[in-house]
Amino acid sequence: MDSTRPIRATCPECRGPLSEIVKSDGDRKLCEFTCLVGHTYSPRALLEAHSQTQESSLWSAVVALEEAAILVEAAVSEFRPEVADRLKEQAQLKLKQAGQLRGILEHLEPFQTGPKD
Amino acid sequence: MIGASPGGVEALKALVSFLPSDLPASVFAVLHITPWADSLLPRILDHNGRLPAQHPISGQPILPGNVYVAPPDQHMLLEKDSIRLWHGPKENLHRPAINPLFRSAAVHFKQRVIGVILSGTRDDGSAGLWWVKEFGGLTVVQDPSEAGFSDMPRSAIEHVAVDHVLDLAGIGTLLTELAVDAEPKKRRIK
Image (cartoon, rainbow over all chains, first blue to last red; front, side):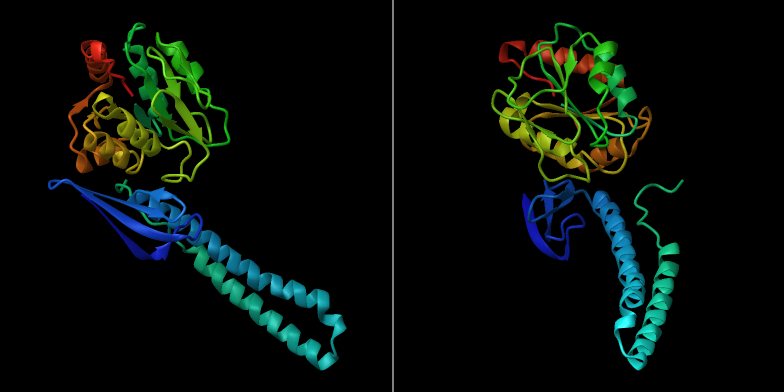
């Protein structure tokens, strides 16, 4: 018997909607996850894939903040001095926030699904 | 039909060395490998066994006495009489992946399929083996104590009703006996 139900999470590879498929033969149970387009994961593969996506998403967030400062630097001469000063302050704050995210990334752990060494 | 992951090259090398040159069955092997490297596996298996090993091309007919190895970056699927290669969605982050081969073989060849899970990491391959069992095929797993990486065999034993847990020599003997016994019915070994 198979049962399939959508879950409130997305595919680590494509961000499509994800469903859980549970097979059961009475004695044993096997669980898989599959998305709208067909990326399919065992429970351990799903958590491993998610860990990779989680890390790359957070690096994208670092880029979003750090490049803001670069954009300000490139465009700041086009603005009146009082606006330019405010932009530079905001850029400094974004760099600081990016630094906090880098701190989180330094301590980010992938899910450990294997046996302990 | 054989699925393996890390440690699988060594296991496959040993397993093909136990198969006779007149095996009346076809062998299909998927190793979870990096998709961008050209695989040396057919040459390695060719060199270590008596059966010719190759990466198939899509649409190629299935012939007994051959070892078909899934090529890099393609799922290997079985159809009624032929092999299809498919650049479809990855499964367990792999392409080629074990599960699509096992599923397609189970659906098309049912009780003529023997699914074998060898050394490998994570729980990859268990779902494919479930399909083999569900469609009446035989399920065989490498003895975890012998496997270089025991996670895949252990997961298969935990989740699927496995018919045989054997060392590689035992698997080679079993596959040969079953193929020969079933010859009138043309059982295929996968």
